[in-house]
Image (cartoon, rainbow, N blue to C red; front, top):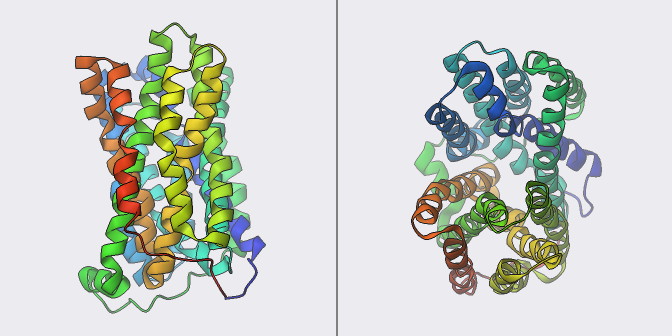
Length: 387
C-alpha cells in the first residue's frame, strides 16, 4: 500500500459501482410499463420491489464473507455481468414469474459486486481512504440519478422490447474491466467458518463496529423516509410533480457533493468530528426543508440532503480502518445491511403516514438524528490515515 491513491484502480472500482447501479436503477421507474404490458397487480409490483431490495442489500453480509474468504474476480466481474445481462432481459419477460426471476438474478449480481469492490477501495486509496470511498459512493449515487432518466426516455422512444440492447454499454465496460481489474487481496480468512471469520475480522473492535452500524441504520431510516415521502408531501401541499421531482433531485445531488467533502475532511481531521457536525446539523436542516415555502424549499432540500447523505461513505471507510481484515464483510454490513434495513422501515413509515398524515410522520423522523449524535459520542477517534 502506498501513500498516494492508485487513481486508475479507484476509477475502475467506481466504474463497476456506477455501471451496475445504472442497471439496477432501471426497475422502479419501469413499473408502470411492466404493469401495462403484463397486467401486474400492485401486490405483484410489491413482490418484485421487495425481492429486489432483499437480494440487493440484506444478503450482502453473506456475500461479503465469501468475498473475504475466497479471493476471486468472480465476485466483481461475475456480479456485474449478472446485473448487466438480467436487468435488461426484464424488458422481454413474457410473464410475471419470468420478470421476477430476471430482477432477482440481477439483484443477486448487485449483491456480489458491491461488497467485493467496496472492500478493494482502501487497498488502493493510500492515505485518502475517506475521500476515495466518497468518490466510489458518488459513482452509485450518480447512477441512481442517471439511470431512471435514461431508461424512461429510452423505453418511451423504443419500447420495453428494446431494453436488451442496453446491454451494449455494460458489456463494453465489462470488457475493459476484465483487462484492468486485479484479483482482490487475501484477508487470511480462507480456512475460517462464517462466525470464526467474523470474530477474527472484528475481534475486540466489534462493539465499535456495532455502534457505527447502528448510526448507519438510523441514518438510512431518515434518508430513505424523506426520499420516499417528501415528494409525496410536496405534491399534496400544492407543488407540481415536476417541482417535486426537482426537490428529490436536489436532495440526492446534495449528497454527492457532501459525501466528497466529508471524505476529504475525514482524511484530514478524522471521522468523528465530521460525523458529529453533520448529524448535529441534520435535524435543523430537515426542519428547514419541512417549513420552507416557495423557492426556499429548494435550498431546504439541498441543505437537508447535504447533511443526511454526507456520512453514507464514511461509515464504510471508518469501519474498514478499524477492522481491516474484513474489508468486504464490514462494507456489506455498513452499506448493504444497514441501507437495506433502513429501507425496510419505509413501509412502517408509510402505514403511519396513512394513519396520521405524511407531514407529522416526517416531522417525527426529523428528530431521529439526536439519537445518532449520542451514539457518535461513543465513537473512538480514528484520525487522519498515515501510510
